[in-house]
Amino acid sequence: MPDLAGKAAIVTGCASGIGAAAVRRLAADGAQVLGTDIDAAGGQALCDAVGARFMVQDVADEARWEAVVAAAVEAFGRLDILVNNAGTVSSRSIGEVDMAAWSRVIGINLTGTMLGCRAAIAAMQGNPGGAKGSIVNIASTTAIAPLPTDVGYSASKAGVRALSKSIATWCAQQGWAIRCNTVIPGATDTGILSQAEKLTPGLKAAVAATSPMKRLADPAETAAAIAFLASDECPYMTGGEMLVDGGMMSLHPGF
Ligand code: NAD
Image (cartoon, rainbow, N blue to C red; front, side):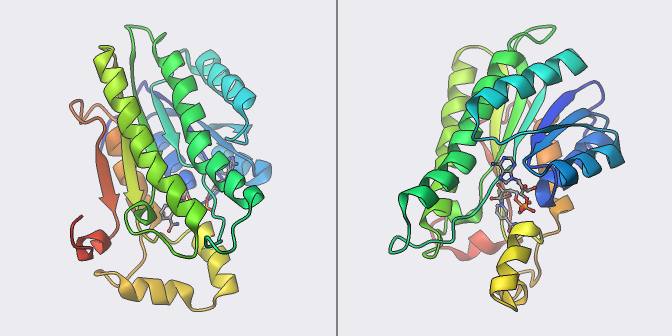
């Protein structure tokens, strides 16, 4: 189990699903955690339950990022880990998408991730002992096998993969020990899938049936990969990607 004792972390989208599991896991591994979410009640309850701090945050709001990172540094004296997890879907094909839906999903999933990386990297440069830290961005297998029914979500998650690699290489070239990696979850049993299940009863079982493992991921399984990348266990890993998809993408020739 990665040792995160003494490390300070921010996890976005902490009220539910993978973000909630990540807060639980990072805290259990010894990190001090600040969770954020637009869901004030859900985020506060989760963070209270594990002894983490909580702030309301819309990750698409540029100014709020400065406040969140400043609060973490003030509370913990440093920032070692950022998990850019908050995400949403638009559920629109290219034939249905309008500018409002497109801008919303790109704003949260892609621009929000960029804003978080920018603010965290600035803070990580001021860490005691010099520039050091680990950023974990959450993409999706839809970045590799895009959904015809959600053009904005698929494009935003493909963007997260390139964003992570650009940030990783730039930080390394500056001589900073700031790593940036991507976790690529497959179908995971969280709020996003539960919402879709309400519109399409039986969806979860149908998706699970297509998986080589014949089941959805538990969010704690994704959080384990996040904790590993966040830790000092993999200092030479940057610009990398970890699939947590039960083997699903191995069925896609060429990947
Ligand atoms: P979830 O719906 O359970 O959790 C998402 C959380 O993000 C919620 O708590 C929500 O309130 C929060 N959020 C939404 N918009 C926000 C905003 N603008 N600012 C701050 N918080 C916001 O879903 P999840 O599956 O846990 O999703 C977490 C991440 O995992 C997302 O980036 C998602 O795209 C990704 N992902 C999920 C799956 C899956 O099958 N569940 C697969 C691949 C990738």
